[in-house]
Image 1 (cartoon, rainbow, N blue to C red):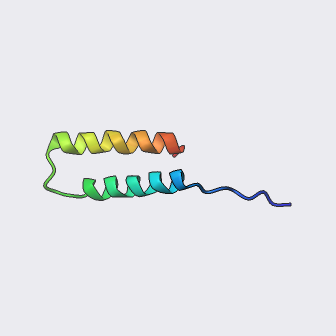
Image 2 (image 1 turned 45 degrees about the vertical axis):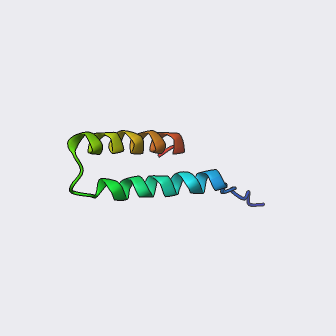
Image 3 (image 1 turned 180 degrees about the horizontal axis):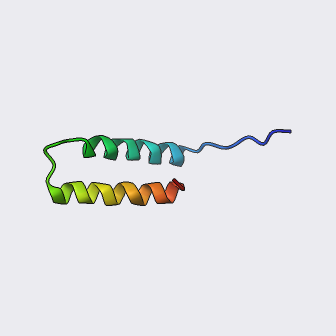
Length: 51
């Protein structure tokens, strides 16, 4: 019998945060510091999610 994978609210929330951070990163008007901060936060979330 197939095992169902549970998709939690927290996982959805993390995905939405990650999507928003990536969208902000696409802004060309960001300073270098802002861009580096976003990249670090994206990497942190991706690691937590197992990407």
